[in-house]
Length: 263
Image: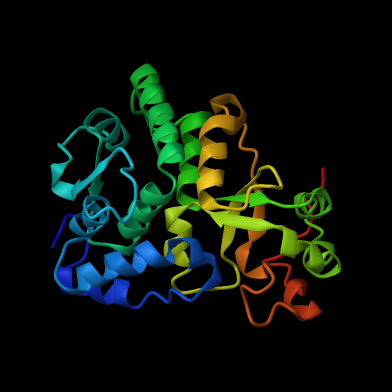
């Protein structure tokens, strides 16, 4: 059993249970299924992810996946990745999805890692991460990128849930919610209505993950990110992402679709 991970058999069972027909997994389906197939056949998670690169299934992301025990004691995870270009990877759903994000969003992941490493070099590792590292962690673990018409963006920012998801429902055909956070993807293996993403607004025209990766790597500044420019979006509210959300009552749950904050 890898440190902090599962046994190889348990990891294989967990990965085999992923429902790749879920709409939010569509961008990751092809590579994800190939990697799962290799894990089920006996490969470790890191080995399976590396094989996708070595076999030419995906361009080189600029990092190599390694077993968790490659990380030396006392060295921060982020600094190790920045200096060694190796990503410590456990036999676990969490790290499996982290690897898939590295393969699909390599430019954004490298940029976030560079900012993390720079902040650590400047401030060290303390009890608190600081605003930039905290925001990077939110994005990396639970973030998403929304590309949508302005009216839809405004309704979501103002937490006008009925307007965003019902009145403006046709506008979702012009929208894309690209899930970036690997912990978010892990949670959605067992979908629950309260699961909420920290969402960044991007340009409406971004339709593919590759374009979203380029936007996130080049257009988002460290200063802007440190301000935590996120909006909460319960992801199962997205039309087509839950069988029940075509009904108005789906959005009446105040514990999930919370009202705007008062001053």
